[in-house]
Length: 304
Image (cartoon, rainbow, N blue to C red; front, side, top):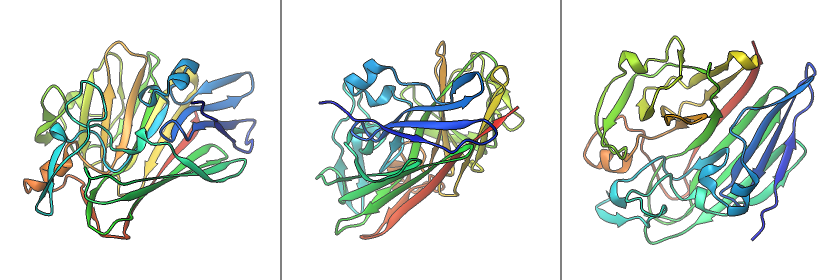
């Protein structure tokens, strides 16, 4: 099945403009985000190859939504409101369902203009406490991309909930990351959290840190909602600002790769089970029928 892209363009400001490409039918994913300025075009997110689009491989795109939870649920099992649930596997060979349902759904275009688009999906299933619907609204402003996420409980029962984004950023050799983070979850090799500790010095990004060969795949808590990716050799940085629902961030920096992820998210890995064990501060929301969970992430481009 083919997928028709949606392309947005911003107004030009100071001889610079932004362009965004999305594929609603491929998990509501961004497939390209670029800055055009005199003499060059820069990818601000990892560009998506044509083969990835043809194969509809959402996990290899530029950015996709995390809804109705971020990251993993251990073995797909959790208890909520006195009832046990078993999530359907969503990644072959992986025991822990990953990143919610939204990235595996086809999204519909509700509204579209030259610089904005609203996408939506809905889902029902016996493996989750309630029916749900989600929207993503993308808006290109002069010098910025604004993404609004909304998850709504459309069923008759309460449900646990989390939201977030999974962007992939280019990682040239001089890439630096700035972020204020209070804690980090340590756990198993397959990223199931066991204990929460203060951020150690080697993972302290508060004053900025070169990513270099740093290898990370961890969920951090106590994020202030502000971060910055700096590319000195490209003469540009990208400021990330999120509303206060998104109190966690997953940093994924696989060794030897030319990308890394800084994922603004509302919940810790395996938050459904952590919360059921009485652990607080894991970012789990509970939505009653008709209630929604909303957040905004803004990516602002600045020249150095």
